Image (tube, rainbow, N blue to C red; front, side, top):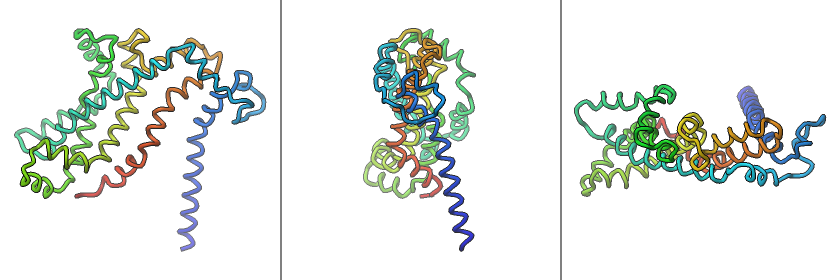
Length: 275
């Protein structure tokens, strides 16, 4: 019994130490974002600035249209997610609950895109987007990502765990496929849907390569491109402004994770439970 207590104490200590190590860079980011340039490079290290310079955030807005970048990023991420859900939920239902010839082969071909990095198909995507006249548009930023093999795979596995008796009861009550999906599958699969939504939004919020390829004006640029241009503009001369801009870019996605982390954790805790 005593040995188990010591093991628990050691595990808690290791986890707390790892948490501090992981969170320290973000704490330093916040600290630097609120300092004056003179306080960044000093002999005495201090997490707390002498005076909190909230004006750093106003200064970055004067130098670059970060609110416009923010709006573009939200439109792109939410647009991708909505279309993904409209496509992957019916696709996952078909692969999980329906029987049709060649289902397994079609599913294998459908999810094979999980193994394909974006860089490997960047040229076909660019040519298709160009031929459709969608370069330098938000639609062009959204279009290549609307079909998600990963999301289809996640939801298919969740739908397969839902008892067949619920489907039989719904059919006996006169529910069709769409009503069964809307009233039964989606409510029971909410943790998985939220988890996929978090992964999708985080992925496209941080996407740099595709927006860099097809955008060349501030009207449609996203936060990652705006931050990259801001770094080049500053050339490392004012670290307080650079950290303020970085904090502005990453704070929304961190807040989104904190707001949905319980559902995210619940999905992983229950992912191995069979219905």
